Length: 258
Image 1 (cartoon, helix red, strand yellow):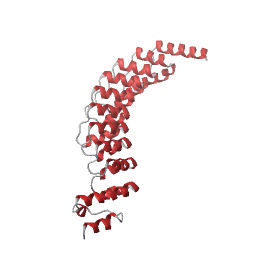
Image 2 (tube, one colour):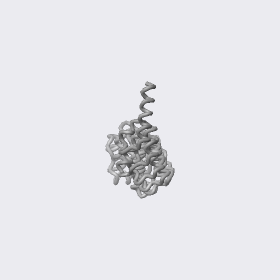
Image 3 (tube, rainbow, N blue to C red):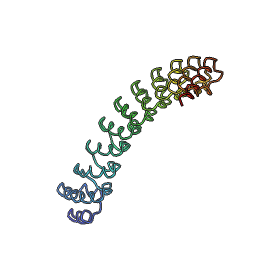
Image 4 (cartoon, rainbow, N blue to C red):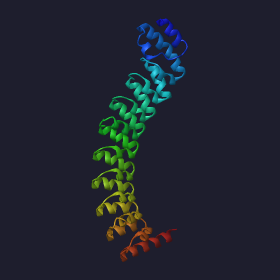
């Protein structure tokens, strides 16, 4: 079968040409094949998985914008095409070989958990990529090995409960977490009195989370909880007289101002 017959049989009929036959074509015949395949792919992007060769960037862009997963079927996609794909769906970075840092950043900005696919490639994401990931989705912190203090801080500032995924957080990270959400003290082992105070100042009811740890909060912590909201009294085991008096006074003030 001649090259012309191949083009007639496979290209003109819209059928994919077998790879071994494509490789036998002359450069001019390959160009003819690719030009006709462009028309087929533009009509139905799914066809790209059946064809071979490098297509113009405009064709590649059209394909990944319609379905980012088709990037897997594109030979040597340009960085521009890779960016278009991950900006559409961050997790397709798992289908890209050796993505640049710019592509990694675009992927995690679209979907923070795309960092899992980067790490699975054996790539250590830069701090900038890690920060972008946790700023998009705080759960990303769970998959980052030995995140820096700055990355940890970004995660807990996004959502206090992120501290539950951080091993041995420093006191400054603990404080940032409870200042965001006082009840996240439940994830902190042996919180200092300073951390306890910050937690109940954010949310008086957090005092019950302290007591669940078997810690008896100091009078200062109890008073701070009541000052945040008098209703915290019902969560305090064996409150001191000062604490009970303050709670009563604040409740009466609330009643007067209604």
